[in-house]
Image (cartoon, rainbow, N blue to C red; front, side, top):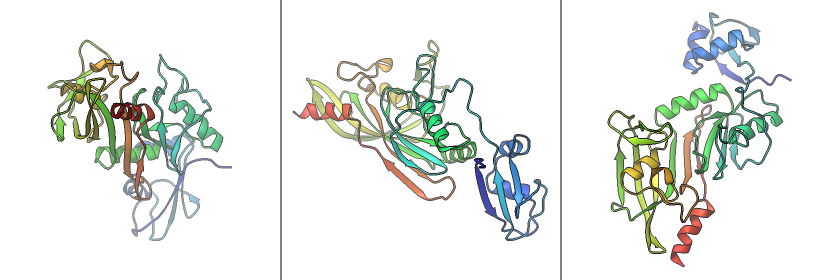
Length: 302
């Protein structure tokens, strides 16, 4: 059985060169090179051809991408994945806290990527894990994975054009003053750390919208439950922007938060909206706030 990822198109322009049609169908030059040299296939009306082929209206074009190989060091593992949505193109998961999205030196196994490779292998897919929306290890909630490099290419284009929208909820120290505000401050790596980021003039543009949901006190400690919308996806963006405001996330020791109430940063991706990379269908996924964050809010009202 041929497990190669395959797309089919109908030619709509008389006399168009196949290469031009493939560009209009958003097949990247990199993908075309892989198709040519790594075991892919281009056919028109079921006959193999090259990119110089002249198309006629109604021609049936089939693009078979070469089988993918997972990265070295990415072990195939099997385990539970909380699947919110899945089709031939994308996989949307609800990631628990304390699980890495990709393996690292400190946490080489049981990452989302490891388990996704096992999931794909069980499905007979010649593919590897392509992370579209990554979450920090301690952050919980929705994340999206592309099931093929071409889909990853399409979702990357969508992210750069602002067509993928993510919203988060967090609990931060102190009572945030403004009910709604936008934080537009550049973020870059801190000179004294390979991990920590900070607001700095020479950093990358970063934009976060903040909405207050509830101000409360827990054991006489002021806290605020907030919703955040990301317009950019910089590393640690929410954590850095809220710390810059003087309201670090509960549990976020790296940026000035306390772990007295929660043993991780209190951050959860509650909403993910996007257009399907192949069909253009509008997709919207939601995830209830993680239980540990719900409990912190609930206990403050007791």
